[in-house]
Length: 318
Image (cartoon, rainbow, N blue to C red):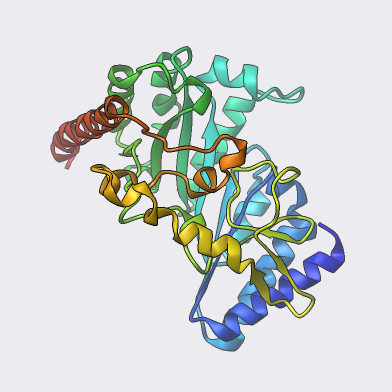
């Protein structure tokens, strides 16, 4: 991000503080901590200054690989209003290190050590496990690498298990529950794989949510190829964020299609709005026939059954 765009982002933050009751910022990449001193820290300092001037709250979160966290950076965080860190592991130690290669260190150990440091310093961590049919068994070892922290610190670490999209055709539900149990038995919480889109919609579907890319272009979604997609809006020189009304209207009208008559609408909520809008690139209904809909419903019921069983494990620990 150039210094000019960074300046414009500061103006946008100041304008949001003026126009709204609060602001939530998440740093996302790439890897945001690569530019910690030049971009991240200045933005955090500016947020804090604006918050104190305006008397309005702010919260800052991170999606990071966790590798570059240091004692100094973690010490810095104590001076700011920090939400959570989402840190991803790609399987157990052996699988992860094949994916996240480092010439200088054991990537898995460095990251898990940093997760513990965050939790020990009072910071919330969401550990996202990217699982496949091949690596999910190796993930059973992961909770044990983190279990040597206090019970209080464990309350600040939550796991989310996500099957990578390239592997979705394979049913790993039974192994997923084994992983859930392993996480719970080590004293950590786990969130469901199936998101509650009705009560917790995607950030991209929220009206006052915007993704500012490093080049200043504005989008509604981070899970895209920024080089291929048309921006959803722009950030102007005065810091105001202008969204394309045509794009927003299309997003809002999705449910006016056949979705409104679909029997699983309250669960599915139409799926990914960005995918459905992008029909020319192959976007389509995520559950196009009755068989697909039934599998989705059954999977959701299984998920609820699993979570009830985990509650029994947690009750015994209490």
